[in-house]
Image 1 (cartoon, rainbow, N blue to C red):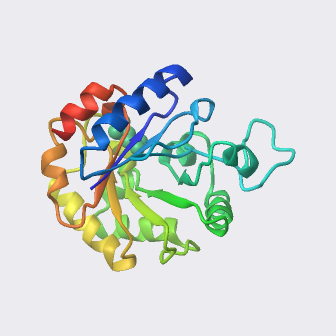
Image 2 (cartoon, rainbow, N blue to C red):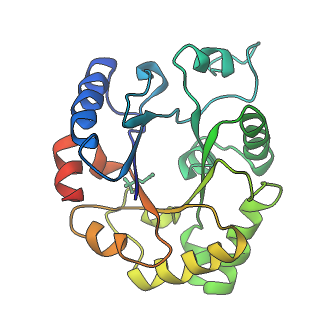
Length: 226
Ligand code: PGA
């Protein structure tokens, strides 16, 4: 399975380094694939068994984009993995579809491994499965879903950081439908924790998990994985 930890705006350089070293010790004995996405200030080179990705970057090598980092800054750390389309970037920071697509195109062109997040808000979910799929499909419009280094993550917005994950049957249905659109690895994210991980991991078409809150303490993250 792919096990990815999204630190969001948590951890410092030193705590990330410790986390990475300790996770590497664990990962070298594990059959899972591990990724961490620390804040940009804590980026570092990947270790043999833990890939370090960036949570966000601008679609340029360098230039005048105050507050952003570009390809040149990522190259300093050998970063070749990026998270694009996370719900907090879309709905808190305000990235629209056009911005998300530009980032996808730029980093795909550069050969990055792209974790691409999609997910509906609660009102769409309440309208039923057809609405959810229409919405998810709209988020994939203009995205090359056959890109060889694409990893999709289904993260319903209402489940992120709320402690309420999607039900197993919701995950199973949506993942099956997404697999009809793309055969790329598909992660589930949204309140994955030590109570629900084992069950979610067994759902068909779940190729891994993208974990926020429950990943910030490495001890808890490893207990969760079991
Ligand atoms: P959560 O976050 O695990 O805290 O719900 C998941 C994510 O945003 O990737």
